Image (cartoon, rainbow, N blue to C red):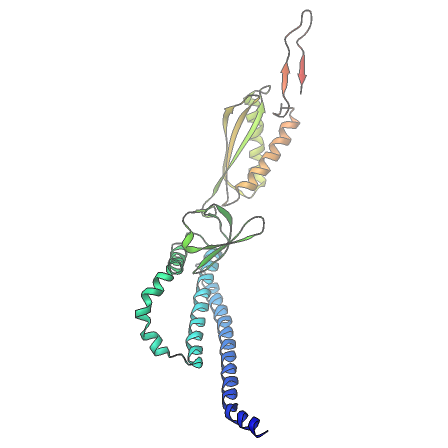
Amino acid sequence: MDHLQHYWSAHVDDVERALWDLAKIIALFVISRIAIKISNRLIRRFFQLNGKLDERRRETLVSLFTNIVKYAVYFILLLTVLPIFGVNIGGLLAGAGVAGIAVAFGAQSLIKDFFNGFFIIFEDQFGVGDTVKINNVVGQVHSIGLRVTTLKVWTGELEIIPNGQITQVTNYSKFNSMAVIEVNIGYGTPEKEAITIIENVLAELKKTCEDIVGDVEVLGVQSLNDHNYTIRATAECAPNARFGVERLARQKIREALQEAGVDLPYQKVVYLQEQEGGEPSRENS
């Protein structure tokens, strides 16, 4: 029993010190999380009060500055916690110049991610909510950080792309888009008749579809195929609205062509040679 009492009295100070250090680390972590949440709210409120920024630009800047605050707070937390474990911060910082070269070589990709992230945001290459194609991945920008950009593709997956690997960007949300509608018409229908029908459909669609913001135009016959010819039309649309307009236009044009009895390309018409004493025969297949 005396041996146990002696052992406990010899180590009780160490146990108390360890528990006190653990309590300080937990308290510092909780304070850091609270500081990040409060800072994020203040950043969002600050940019909401700035009426000169549109929603897209505002969300992009909020994403950037919240990331900066998060990294800064965690860095300060690290510098505060290390002395608790007996690490000499002064000596560590003094040796940073010597170790900096080795660290720089090992963190080249991370540094490249940070620099690319700054250029992407301040050059306004794309913003949160934009529909873009990055390295052949098409999706809506979910967030932009200093290190990574996340895209939500149309099937629901979230693509995470390091900023340093972004080499080519196509932004579909910057300017108005052009819907291109191509319709195949059977050779049994004169092109003037088909063009008139398509012009009427697009003129009516422009009145009812808010996504069509500019001129609609039927350009004429685009190509001659084996069993049909192709008529091309265009419509100027709001950014990233071309695909919906194209689908709607094709539907309306198909309905109008069917009502007018126009030969559709899925119906191949075969004319047989005229038989003696009879009329030329026609078969549909």
